[in-house]
Length: 219
Image (cartoon, rainbow, N blue to C red; front, side, top):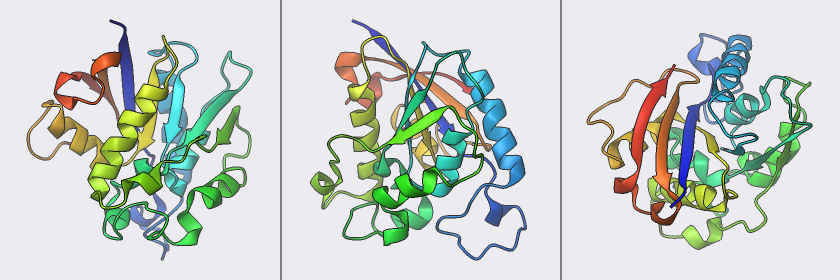
């Protein structure tokens, strides 16, 4: 059975954690260093993937910017799917109850994310942002924020085409949760900005995280 490589990337440096005067701790932007970190991470990451990979991102601004920082590639364009459930693991969002439409402020909803993405730096990017064709967050009512995140991870990986690797741009809490549920690590895991955790999994067993094989953490 075909194996899928899943690369889970944390966003770059966020402004509110860099001693910048930022009041928005729910949805801060990246610093200029954060954009540089993201561009450098993509340069390394794209060397490890089938071409082109299937890319999904959290709908929060720092992840949209990280996803948008892809440097010029041999591909004419790259499509990046905004998957709001990848934001449910972020601490500030999980405290709201996750990314369910009935809970999140309009400014971080999926439609807002699509509008914001085109206006965010870097303004020059080879990628195009799209919303998932069948938004399923409404089906996650009653599920914990981390449950929303896990269900979204499974949905993203299962939707990839045969032979495609999968890149998920998300938050440190999500990487730590995946390290725990796949048995890759116990306790708190160091997740530096733009660190990339790599797993492989059989397409037929994606829903069983115990079958995911952890490969490495690329920093």
